[in-house]
Length: 148
Image 1 (cartoon, one colour):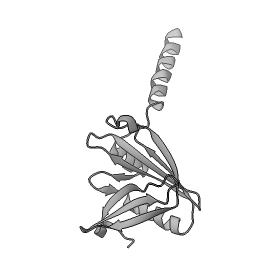
Image 2 (tube, rainbow, N blue to C red):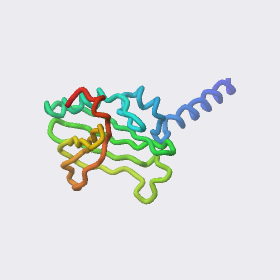
Image 3 (cartoon, rainbow, N blue to C red):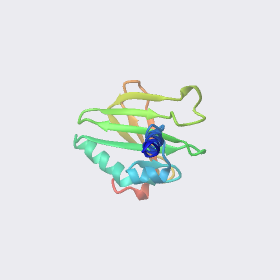
């Protein structure tokens, strides 16, 4: 009986230690979770476009944009639209090489702007933020977008 109890306790400790991990996950897991994943290309772009539609219709919505460094470390950008403003969170706490700027930064923003560049790419930035900085979200090949 003591042996069974010891095994249960050890399993509980092991499982709970996984539950308390940093929250980082690889791009395959991020795609499965529905993140808009930005690395060499963009996955789940249709979800991002739905967020833009909801934004223009003043409908509440939440998305996560997950980018990866060259070393494979995730950088999370969470956008929560409450019908009026976007609560924006930038989290590079899992980036091993982030240096002194490593951590979580929060802001309140009002819009997402679209910039077309000379190539066939469209960049999306979060803008109208209380801290005054526009932030890059994703870059997409113009041909991949349904919304124009």
